[in-house]
Length: 181
Image (cartoon, rainbow, N blue to C red; front, side):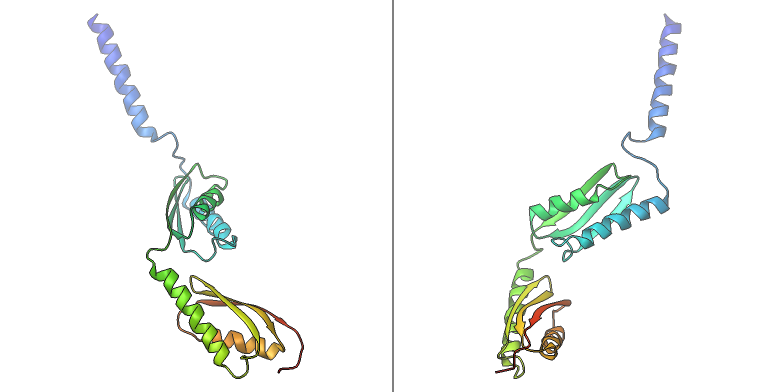
């Protein structure tokens, strides 16, 4: 009987040693090069997504587990980011994204910036008769509407670009070719 207990103890110790040395079942050892490749692929997908490209999302990959950190505007964007992070080689996504602005200041900043830019465009002698709409999301300004000339479209972009708080300008103004009023 003592011999059976010894065998059982040795078998148990061997099993524990083996389990400890293999690591968690979900972890997959991959090279640093593969981790970087997966990270870049995920970051590329997030950057190309229209709803997510204006959000700051940090991506890290370790042992085939992708971790997402940062802030998105909605729970739908959070779910979309996680979906895009499931690329070949990723076995799990740790989605640590916060939903909503870190504080109300971001929304207020965008609103204030939009108001400021509309005022500047209306006050500009060259643009005051143009039909320009301004929207802002996380410092990215989108100009839509119509202007008579390409020069006025370019001027509108320049006026907006030099304002404090503007990260980039997306000029979607349509040139009508109509003479200025």
